[in-house]
Image 1 (cartoon, rainbow, N blue to C red):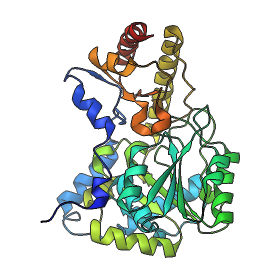
Image 2 (image 1 turned 90 degrees about the vertical axis):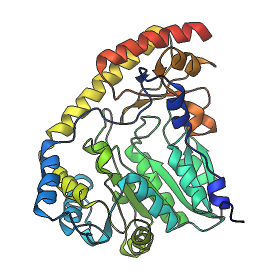
Image 3 (image 1 turned 180 degrees about the vertical axis):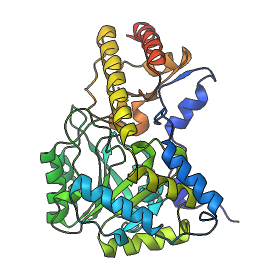
Length: 373
């Protein structure tokens, strides 16, 4: 009798989904990692034009349309100063597929992948789906990724390590010094660095830098996406890039799992990349205001929280029972342990929501804190 693969039995539905299902329909949702801005009009129009003209009716190249890949290469040349060949870019079904093909192409059964703990839920699950073993690496007290901790965790079985800046669930931004260290570690230990940069444009303090800027070998693969950069989560359009030899292997996975990314989404993303970027500045300024509202509210309540420097997440330290009390009172927050064992004692708050709702949620969190402290 056919049962189920060992790989799929090693993973389960995300703890974030369990929290959503426990909350009421009218709850204030501080658990959803999604910008509350519309997709730029010029991106929408590009998709409509592609549909109406028939350009979106057929498969694109497996890697994606040349126009999109050229736009992606131009973006990274401008932002990171790297000479990126459009041939070394694969358009994917969101950043999620980009992560999947990067790990699937490089990790064998039994290989170790070092992941930040707490860290994005997909890192552990996608590693297990490859047959690999995830090795959680604790963060610093300020929730940044510590290169020394990564280097200390490397063994002869290590195939890759994942870094994420700005970070989900932490909102932490790695310094240039740390990013240079990530590149050095990949070079000197001959292991792959998978750099998840999907929140690249949402930085309030510091500066986004990529390990691929500093690497002297081809041991860095970069994952990015239009989802958070341009508020296009529903379009499911991301990309992955790296050296030609690595891209060729990732393309083998992508070709059979996906064939190509959605054609309308590719035309929309190209327009977003080439068009007016005012929406990016508007979103970043708005998220910074919301961050400050949240931190001021935490100060008033007495909740300790490392200052998020980017993305739109905060990870305060909270007492036992706080998350359940919030949910019972109609505010969705996610328990820190959903992102790894070292997330215990924290909650993840997404402040990508209306400022009035955020203030209302803070009032509820104050009540929940008083109930459990």
